[in-house]
Length: 262
Image (cartoon, rainbow, N blue to C red; front, side, top):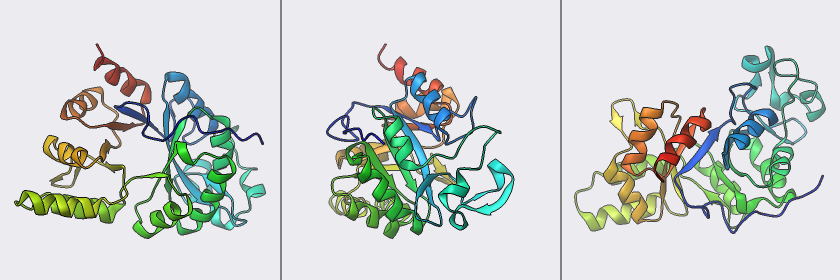
């Protein structure tokens, strides 16, 4: 396998707003497949959001789900299969489940947002990222705070976004009326993070507001919103100042971002 050097000095180097192709562009291909990634890149996406689990023999494979039920109709966990077994699976009859290093190697000009879906996936993902020398074009994240920190510690300089614990603390800190204390609490909650990646709202709580986006940005932290597929919603969020749109329809999101330059 040919290893490609990093394409730039860092994941955040290109100017935003950023469009993150959620599991690729799965309009004419199953999600998280090489074709879905290729379609996203062909549409103009320079960022791909994806998910990683581990196989029984310790290989990082790209899949949102821990098992094959939804996409392959098989009642098997990835963690119970060796890579050789996983490679026999065909999604929609023809598409393989890629490994993380296969995807990173196949798209050397693309930045990847990698969600570590299990504790077992951390070490294999780190090995894959190092093998392809892709640290500078990967952002690692996880809902689990400790899992994310394990990956960050093993990949010096890698970009990362806040886990659920940090986001909760940041939202709570934003309610503190004393400006100096609020900033200190926000800085602590988001320490080491270059982004928060959140839904616009969680139940009755609105997470993404213009003031919150601006306050995070003042600390050098970007706001990326998932998963946004309606152009009107994309336009409204971009007007609030968000720095990234995570979308199943990267093609549509790229159009909305393009309008900002007109």
